[in-house]
Image (cartoon, rainbow, N blue to C red; front, side, top):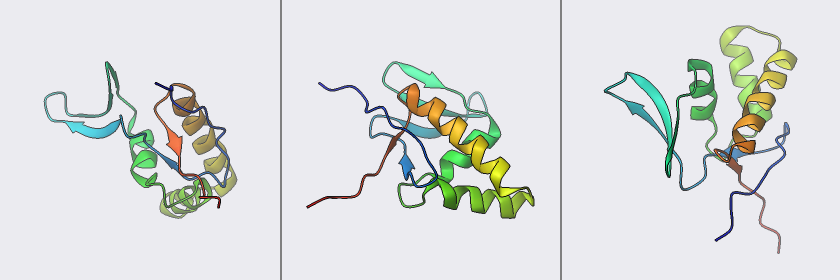
Length: 103
C-alpha cells in the first residue's frame, strides 16, 4: 500500500483532502477536526476556512483571491500564508491534489 503522495503546493495546485481524511465538526468539543485513520488534527478557524475552499476544483490562487476579497487584505500576503499552511498539511499527509489527466 502506497503512502500519501508528497505534493509541492503552488498557486496553481488544486488541493483536496485525501480520500482517507474528512473535515468534520466535532459537536462534543465544538471544534472542527480533520479525521484520518488513527489521527485527528484540530486546525484553527482560518485553516478550516481555507480547507473548506479546497474542493479539488479551485486552485490555491482562487482560494487566495476569495480570502483577499473577504478580508480586504493583500492577496500576496494571503497567498503566501495559504501556501505555507497547505504545504504543512501536505507534508503531514493531510492533503493531496487533483492532477490533470494526461492521455
